[in-house]
Amino acid sequence: MANALDSNRMTFKLQFHYWFSDKSHTMDALIHNKCERELLELTKAVTKICGVNIKMETEPSGKGGLKNWLTITAKSPKKTAVTKIALVNTVVAACVATPGQTSMSEVGNALLDSLAGKVSQEAGKEQLQKDVHALKIEFANLLPLLDQSSVVKKRRSTFYDLLRKYQKVKSISVALTDETKKPITEEQLVAREEFKSFIVSSNTVAPQIIENAEIEIISPVLMKGKHKWRGMYKGEPISFVMKSDDFMTLVQSGKVEFKSGSTIACTLQIEKKINGVGVERIMGYNILGVGSYSENGKTIETPEAKQKQKQAVVSKRQLDLFG
Image (cartoon, rainbow, N blue to C red; front, side, top):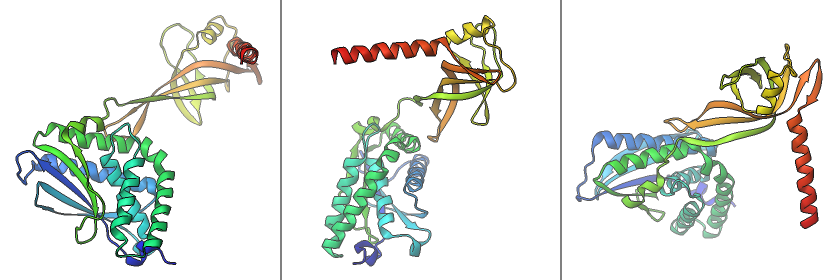
């Protein structure tokens, strides 16, 4: 049986409704344009994760506060299933309506259930339920990427920060509509007092820890302090801080000598921050521990690695004894 949504070739619109405390229908143009940009960039980030090429068209405002409609369509309609576009619309709405530290799962599935209920009168109900079930599976598979996307988090955060600073807005809501602007999902409303829960308070992200990273040493530092070493990691030159006191002692005492092609196997820490558009940037590299190093073509295990192995053996014995 044909896909119910595809057979009807439905066109979806995202309705963004700004509600004002003074009952007016106007909004500061600069703030509105900045908000719209964040929503468009958020949508682009979502479509990239969903793997869909789209085009976006906006429409004039409507009455009742201020409403905008964003029509998302495929660049190649004949090659893109309508269900894909339905998924993109649903995910964007879920992103806008889900606080920063919360998974989009609940809102996204509620929107899909709402979509099924409203569209069932126009399409085969049984087939539509199968379509929505398939969309839920695809949505669930994308959730880890969506929930962890720094670009989505940052764009959403900037959007709500703009609204938070603009006192006139008392709430924002988002819903999916059909091509006639008739709602086909329940409106997801976010009140002003909830805006702060969508805002990212820090641009720092958890450091990435890589065990047994191999680094070719270009320029070691023999003196004490926070001077940076130079090396090659995965074919790229990096500067890093050697934070292993045990290994520094070996180097400073002359027990480890570096020659051309010398390498270390280490625990590498990569520090990152999120920039203004939500892209993660590397801020620095640290070596937390060195497991081995090469000398004259031989791999030599360090004392700190041997000590860790002994500690691991002791810990295992204690677990076996009292476990």
